Length: 426
Image (tube, rainbow, N blue to C red):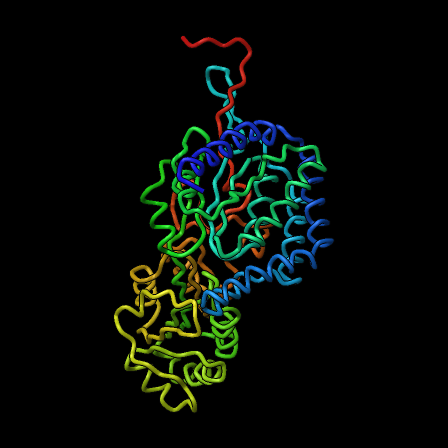
């Protein structure tokens, strides 16, 4: 497709989305729920057909030499599809927050002032790899009364097209405009450049993918961007802590899955528990083939672990998002040093403390400057589905508008409403 055609096509998508957004915004809750339930049903009915489309993407990815963790992100297994369907159903049963009025207060003049929650309008979603994002974005778009334009990665084009057809079928079944959710059908990268530069049609852009993609979009976009650049998440093992629990949680935070942005990439250990904790977690990581890049003090303790893959950590390791079976390990004096390390090196995504000390937990929650801060839980819980948001559109490490997993509320705005009975200003 030449540049002129890409520009025309993207412009048409934008115009259609803007038109559909007015109808999506005023759709009653029951109609939106009907579309979401229809989408859940269609996903379950089409598992086999979707896997045929997905297999084409997987075959192309492997032929192109894509690394296995990246291929893993492309898979639409029956389990992944069931999670998508459950997410749609969860959203369908959640209260509809569109139109709710917050904080209505009587003013001395007699007027009453509050804020009404309304859809943002049209969001553009640019994402790589994971085709399940097509369903997460579409379902959140429907629930929040927005229209959206989706641009998935070229590596998942067949899967995304198949999923988008089911979304439009569900919208049509419920009597909603099928242009309420549109997929950019071309893999031409110029479409991204067009999509992020149409403020007349698109109200916000949400990128999900590698750091390069998000940096490019943040730099070139002419519309606001909700983003996180990377997920350098930490688990801090405090003194005092329950060692057995800390081993279990630190294991899950790293090895449950290596590719997501909420996997722990850094392990900080208080000096007081290091001699007891590190050999135990070291044995777990060694058995699972996880390479440990440690400070000299941690390596001295881990040396005794049979089969441990040990590498001296460099300064770069403290900032690294590995997305692989590698973890950085550092012994710290205690809580204050752990917090200072996290605030300096982390990507402000998700950081956890494993502790028995209530005051330490409270200080960690207050002082760690991240979108999600956890006590005695795996960082892998930083996810819209796990937080009860239904699906999530992404995770924001920005501080304005939306922060952390972005669900329905993150796709809405507030406008002031004023109720009067003929008052005039003196």
